[in-house]
Length: 128
Image 1 (cartoon, rainbow, N blue to C red):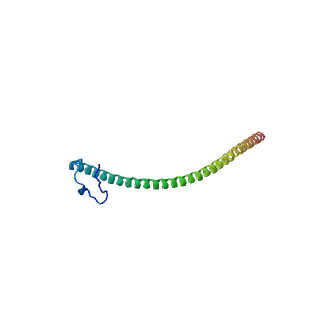
Image 2 (tube, rainbow, N blue to C red; image 1 turned 180 degrees about the vertical axis):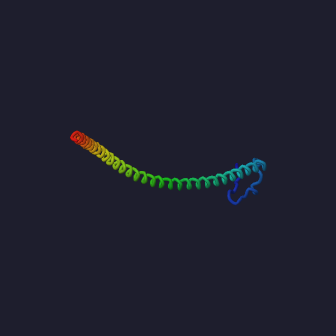
Image 3 (cartoon, rainbow, N blue to C red; image 1 turned 60 degrees about the horizontal axis):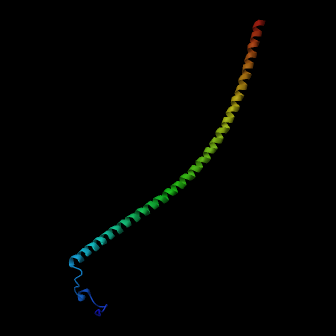
């Protein structure tokens, strides 16, 4: 029942008007297609911008990770120095305690000697 229509080598102009699409509908569709193409271009541009931002942030992230590693190694060095200084402080505190005790002993010996000298002076005064 359908007419035999060759599918190859026929242009739209040769087919003719089927009255199912008007020029206004075609223009509306063309406007929508143009709008979609413009939006697509805008989205591609935005995608490129976002890709550049991602690359920039990734490079910043890598540099920050390197800085963190350097800072961490510096922190480790500082921890070792702190431990050494704490050991030195503990050693000096022990020395200070020793010197304080030694000083007290010397003060006690000095007090005994001063007392002996005082007593000798008293004895000499009484003899004179």
